[in-house]
Image 1 (cartoon, rainbow, N blue to C red):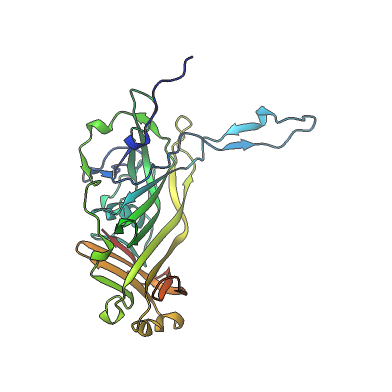
Image 2: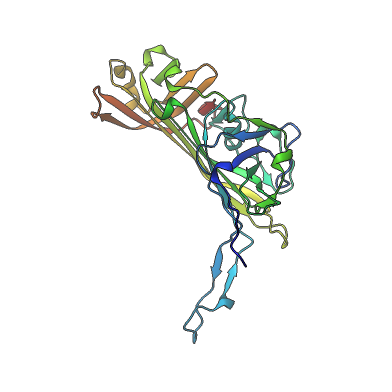
Length: 334
């Protein structure tokens, strides 16, 4: 067989995402929209591999015995990671992580995960699962796209600074227990292209605060901030021995929420000192026209940076809230 003369150019890959109608069916919800994401790096693409289960070494054999090995089709969970610009509407993908909320991607103190059962009808407001296409990523000339059904958002990392063009960037990680398939669907989809939307430039943010995010007494001159929200998603069993689709997903343990902010050290820091030692819930907030990012919790560390012309402080917070309330721990509205 001769070498293939074609290849897959990384620059041709597009990521298209939408809310799923029924968990695992791969169809767009009736209230949903297909969105093309503004990728800034090639995605991490998982293929259809599964874990190899190796049994005990048999006495009398001096080499591995293939009969003691089995590829486990019943328990894989594939992961897809995307790096995108934080353009307008990106909170739609934070919604898949945080669950039921209002107009922004909000993680509330009383969060409870949705039901992720195979074949269940999705509640659109909760965004339980999503469908992800990687256009131009499949090797087959007639099926040029890769399709992943039943995707659950596992983590989001948001970073924003005066460097790197001053635009926010997001790293989104999805997992799915449904094997990716080769299709030729994307060309026929009606897609809302988010890749050309304006991004919020860091220097255009009009509100920058640490501590009491509702008071102008806590205004700062910020240089950067980041927010990280993650959780563990496990699959539960399988429904059949043909495709080995998962019976359901479960969220194991709680959210891990953290973030940090770097800003100019000045007289306003005296107001913030109260949050360093008194177990007082505080946070940071960066907002502008059509843009709002907020993290609330407890200060876990404070550092001084002396590598610049002016002193800079970096405050790290552990996201937290009162589970008896619906207080906001994280809010991302881009």
